[in-house]
Length: 109
Image (cartoon, rainbow, N blue to C red; front, top):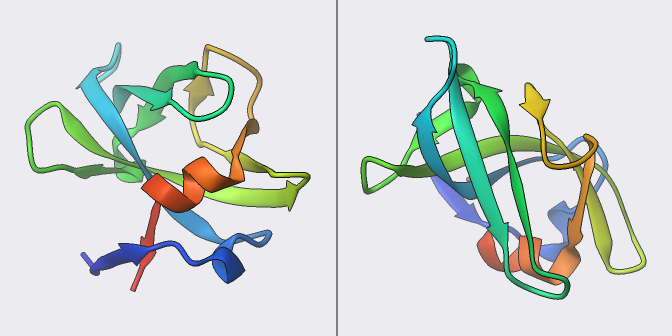
């Protein structure tokens, strides 16, 4: 696996891949994991759903990791990110605050 680096503002463009910190538990099927993302900037919200294991990177602790997302667009302080799998908490793509994404997300270095 390649190394990850902090996201720079110029990287928030359509088609860019970002890795977002999340809590992980087992999914319903062996090929997926349950993902929970806490957005704690602006309007607080929780994003949760089931994501293919191929789109998950293990974290430093057993129940923490990073989930892959693709940026669709960035406008008016919000970024639309698309996750593979089933997002149950809201429609996919998900709108998140731009500043939050810059603070927490990683990109491949």
